[in-house]
Amino acid sequence: MLRGIVVVDFSHYLPGPFASWRLAARADVVIESFRPGVMARLGLGYDDVRRDNERIIYCSISGFGQQSGRSLLGSHDLNYMALSGLLAQLADERGRPVHPKITLTDFIGGMAAAERILAALFARERTGKGAHLDVSLVDGLASMMAGHFAIEHGGGPKTGLSELSGEVVCYQLYETKDGHYMSLAALEPHFWRQFCEMVGHLEWIAAQWAPARPGEAVYDGLVALFREKTLDEWIAFAETVDACLAPVLETGEAKALFADGRLRHLVRLRPDGAWTAAHGPDGQWGGGEPPKVNEHAHLVKGEE
Image 1 (spheres, rainbow, N blue to C red):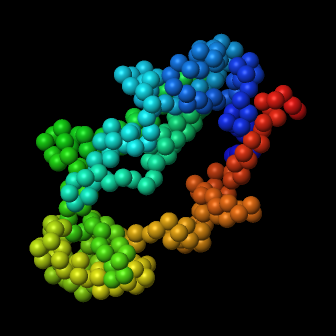
Image 2: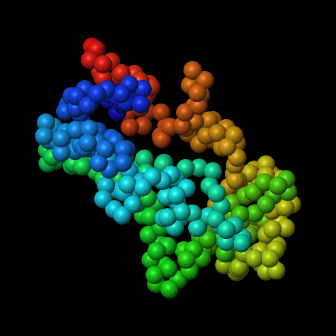
Image 3: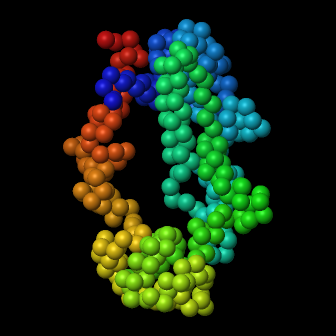
């Protein structure tokens, strides 16, 4: 799939407008993430490129879109999460938002851009026409909140579905004997029944949707149960009992899990010592290695 794909990274070599235009005029895709209007001022806007390349897929990634009340304002991942309503969903017991340790906006925005570029390339094969894709980072997060918006608008809770927001015992995080955590997500009755049977508490089967708060008998019982075993003991249990039970892994633990055959060897140690994470197993979608950093700089400099 990656054979023949050329990636030119202007962060290592910044050509002048003419050289950039020359490349864009024969490119399949242009991706830019300046503030709205910058590329046009450089003579490299969508209309400029389209005059010489009608089939161009021109993707503009910005925080708030090319035209909105915030288009020209600077922001970062934490700001976008805050504005979208998503950050408020990551709250502690007192309702205070929890500072995330991963840049969700960047990753989700990148996936949204890739998805739209692929769709535009497919459409071009059918129509022969290019497109200007206006990708807003905050829009990607807002789309994830669609269900919450609908529920709140209909008079429901602002935290979305109660079954999924930590309010019931069958969909909850529980601390283990050694201070780690297990995630239980036995929403379907057969998973919950299987769990209850295997831990020897048949009386819990009828209480699948019991409130997950201190003082409730089933919740208190589950808290005590999970504190009876270490994380490794619960992992061993989860790998033999089909009950939607999984450990909350730290970064190194997750890396080790994905680096071996248990989860398709998606994390790999390259010969140069760098760790990489793949989107699929070896051979899927044609395989191949992505371009190396600055590999195609000679195209920018006019070299063969």
